[in-house]
Image 1 (cartoon, rainbow, N blue to C red):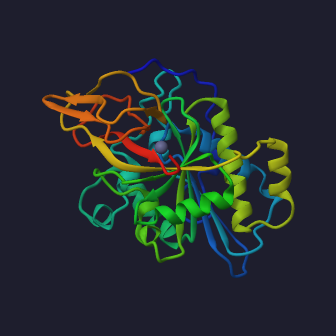
Image 2 (cartoon, helix red, strand yellow):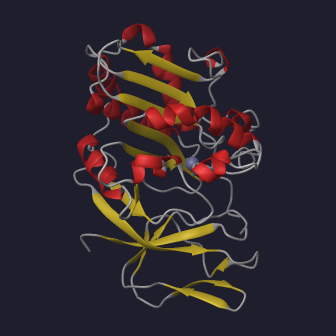
Image 3 (cartoon, protein in one colour):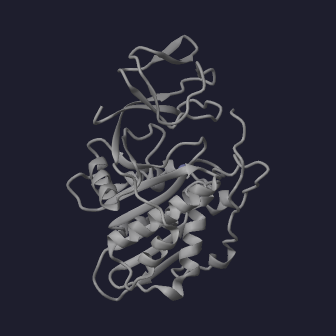
Length: 327
Ligand SMILES: [Zn+2]
């Protein structure tokens, strides 16, 4: 595993939000009493991705300064069991408690007999997710990498996510991928994955988990998402965006993932360290081995999407391979 990046962010004390106002701990709902979209934002799908928690904590702390003008706004902290294990001295250990919270969102996983702390939480959050017209899931990445939006999967809602991200104007890289064989993500659940249905969900990777910029990206993206949804009245969002002072990228490029490289054994190894969004110029370049199996780049200018630095587990996605659409 690569060296531990510095921990610049401090995890917020979220206990003040524990009660929620929905009957579900750490879930807050604000209803305009007027028709409009149900808009949901989640942080802490992964317990060590604290930038999103910082952004939601700020929004909740500011609730005297904004009001929902139409529809409903739901703010949820996801995996508190994992977050409770957060320890800056061992920051990789609090990603999840029993299993990855972002692989349990298929009906079979939620309704099945398998029990885990994450499935229990997902079963509680399911009604909120299934009622959301627009959903933003706030994440970050283990390795330094520019922010990117996971827009969904090809043919299953990914293009809706791209269209939404273009309306937000952020971030600069829009990823359409192939999902994970190990389970369904929240943004792929139900009608989110139906290209013909208006419900849309996106997942922002705000940068490296613990860099201070990640919290700014999370906050900025959250505000732009709320502005797009036109869910808050008044000038709160405009004021906060101005105070942050971040300039949207000059252009947004779509990376389309063509295949996922999945570990078949613990022997999986990259032939050299790769960083996120690295472009490998030549088709057929050896990138990894797994026992006798070799993995090569499928095309010229293959984009390495979020190479994993955690020890390989059977069935885990180690890297996604893609291309810039305008390449
Ligand atoms: Zn994550």
